[in-house]
Amino acid sequence: MPDSKAVQGSRGGSAHKRTSIPTFYRQVVAELRKVVYPTQEQLITYFIVVMVFVIFLMTFVSLLDLGFGKLIFAIFAG
Image (cartoon, rainbow, N blue to C red; front, side, top):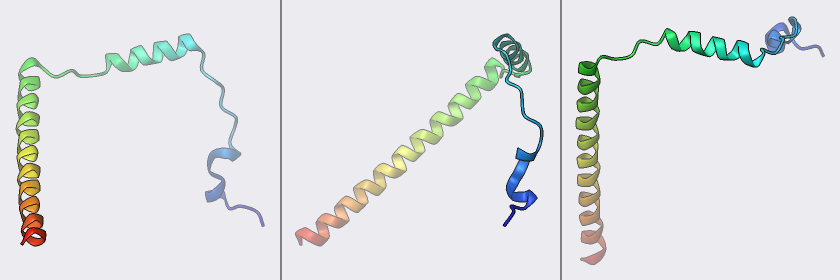
């Protein structure tokens, strides 16, 4: 039973040629030139947002752990 074209994918096309190392390096450098780096102000803002979120999650998980721990001790100790 032959495979459908959807199953074959791109195998039916032409073979791809490997890229040489210098060409690969030039392509990497060209892509890195397209990168837009954040400004110092944006970087500080992102850092603060991430730190606040991480501290919030740490507090939330710690409170859940404390609450479930007390609940388990209440169930099994009493």
